[in-house]
Structure formats: C-alpha cells, structure tokens
Length: 111
Ligand code: HEC
Image (cartoon, rainbow, N blue to C red; front, side):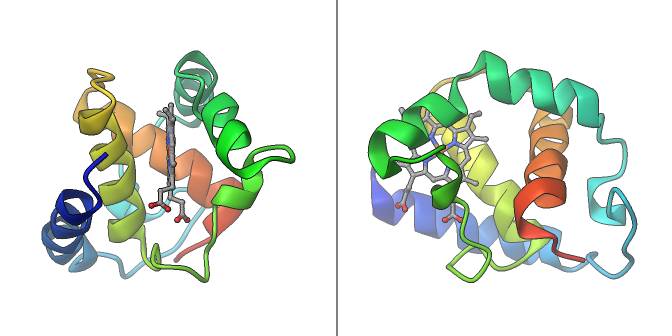
C-alpha cells in the first residue's frame, strides 16, 4: 500500500467529510444511513481483523488508535475508503459508512 497516496487521500477526504461532524448520537450525523449490523458483517466478511492481527498481534484491535493520525469521523471514513480501494474490496459508499460507524462505536468514539 502506498503510504503517501493514502495520506493524500485522507487529507482530501477529511476536508470534505470533516465539515459536517457537528452532532453526536449512536450513529453520528456524518454517518447518516449507516447500518451497524451490516457493517459488522462486512468487517467479518472482509477479514479486516485477521489481517490487523497478523500485523499487530493480540485480538487485532490494537491497530485502532483513536489518539493516532485517525482523529475525526472524516479521517476514519477516509481510512476505511482508502483500504477499500487499496484492497479492491468493491464496497459501496454506504458500506464504507456502515463499517466506519461500527469502528467508531467500538473503538474511536468520535463525536
Ligand atoms: C491485507 C491486510 C489488511 C486488511 C485486509 C485490512 N487492513 Fe486495515 N490496516 C492494515 C494495516 C497494515 C494498517 C496500518 C497502516 C498504517 O498504520 O500505516 C491498517 C490500518 C487500518 C485503520 C487505521 C487504524 C488507525 O487508527 O490508525 C483502519 C481504520 C483500518 N485499517 C480499517 C480496515 C477495515 C475496515 C478493513 C476491512 C474492510 C481493513 N482495514 C482491512 C492492513 C489491513
């Protein structure tokens, strides 16, 4: 994965998405339309955790670092979209949103 490309993508994605991240809730407004159940299924289906576990050990959750460079709802969604493209997962935009909403609920807790 080209790190530079991902970072550049993240910067452009977060400026578009970051603008709207005002209101909080179980599913933040920015992730409007997210389907949490479907997001959980997609995360299992695409073996996100299996790969993260190989790279980071433990239960694979150590990779999710809310205090790291993923520091907003927009950046989180941008990262999931970047993985989608790099790994050729073929996820639809609403799938990316649903996955991001699950990761936010379980790990990042951005408002
Ligand atoms: C082939 C291996 C692989 C797969 C499959 C994979 N990832 Fe990743 N993922 C990585 C690696 C490696 C990193 C760390 C990249 C870095 O730090 O530069 C990462 C980082 C991330 C991060 C950023 C974590 C943080 O806080 O910095 C998120 C979010 C993420 N992945 C989501 C996903 C999701 C969602 C899926 C499944 C749809 C997925 N990944 C599938 C390898 C993978």
